[in-house]
Amino acid sequence: MAWILCVLLFSAVGLALLVLQVKLRAAVRGRGGPPRLPELPVIGSLLSLRGDRPPHVLFQELQATYGETYSLMMGSHSAVIVNHHMHATEVLLKKGRTFAGRPRTVTTDVLTRDGKDIAFGDYSPTWRFHRKIVHRALRMFGEGSASIEKIICRESQFLCGVMCEATSRGMALDLSPELTRAVTNVICSLCFSSSYRRGDPEFEAMLRYSQGIVDTVAKDSLVDIFPWLQVFPNAGLRLLKECVAVRDKLLQKKYNEHKADYSDHVQRDLLDALLRAKRSADNHNTAHPGAEALGLSDDHMLMTVGDIFGAGVETTTTVLKWAVAYLLHHPQVQQRIQQELDTKVGLDRTPKLSDRGCLPYLEATIREVLRIRPVAPLLIPHVALTDTSIGGFRIRKGARVIINLWSLHHDEREWENPERFDPGRFLNKEGTGLVLPSPSYLPFGAGVRVCLGEALSKMELFLFLSWILQRFTLSVPAGQEPPSLEGKFGVVLQPAKYKVNAVPRPGWEAN
Image (cartoon, rainbow, N blue to C red; front, side):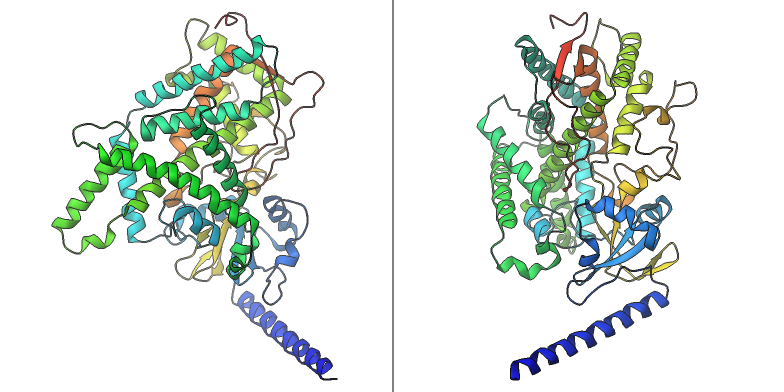
């Protein structure tokens, strides 16, 4: 009998807490908060987020019930979902500093040594100082794009050589590891003055750790929603820690080598530029007592390079894989790009960055790929640093704000037939120049937290695709279906694996 009384007592307490919480939330809405999904004690709104649809699609669909901007509870954390460009612009640009915070989660803390990077680090004086140093280093190394272009073209040449080799053997090719190595070598050349050959054990280890991180970090897993769960065995968290350990071992090795033979008189790469900027800042802090509180540790430098790898490898490689997948589905788009290349570049030379202005259809195609399959459909969450508002809705300090880039890029009010792949939407009526048809296009984010790798990524996308399409016609291997366009949700939206036939175009058979 006693156990029945206990059950009734706990049920009564639970019901009372539920009613109280509902009333409190209703009071918040009454004071001007955004519409909120139903919620329960402890678990919040998780029951409303069930199903097999990825979060960005589900969040888009929930607009029909709750409006363009609404809120929900992820466990004990309040999250505001923004699905329209006007509110997204308010968060990112008009109130960029107000919403510049980042949430602390278990997985991102593991990835970044408790937020000592740029992408996931919380907004603070130290973060601003850190970002300033990184920008200074980027200016010191390769402010002009000539050296970067040379590196990308070198890797494009190697990539095309691998494709030729596969063609000569009559083999369909999985471009994923080849694209990953090419992009990785660009970043390694920029950061460490080094590169990898096929089959290099260190490169293979890098491939494994990168995929492990993509599969486990920042996916709103239960351990991020309920941090106390990390005391229990967790396969995903264990995998993440193992992958981060492999990454950090590699980065530490490169960092130690650079520190050992660093010289103020020679600047070999971006890591040298970072070390120089850090030493200059440290000297300034020594000369100005009180400034040392903003000093950056070696961990900050390592996590900065980790950021550059994350932004510069996984995202760019993913966009390239999506671009090839869509070209396989739309051979007429591929043909038009090749016609443009034949007319404006020809066969006498390879494409250069200076050709971007005269290859508008290729540029439009890249923009359309970034629109229809945004590499990060949910931008990294922001945090409100003060009580504020979005679109007239009151937002409390500490609330997480998620920009649903998928909704912005698939808004039927902004894009005609948004599910249709149509590079022409980014061209003027004559097809001779680029246009931005809607402000609802933010593939790299905007404002204070804009993606660090945006400029480099755009250069790589243009050069890799122009080199490949100048030399090869890509097609689906005989007997196989075109690649799936669904995508696998994670920290980036990855396409499923697929293979491609690459046939050398006339004039490039021997190259």
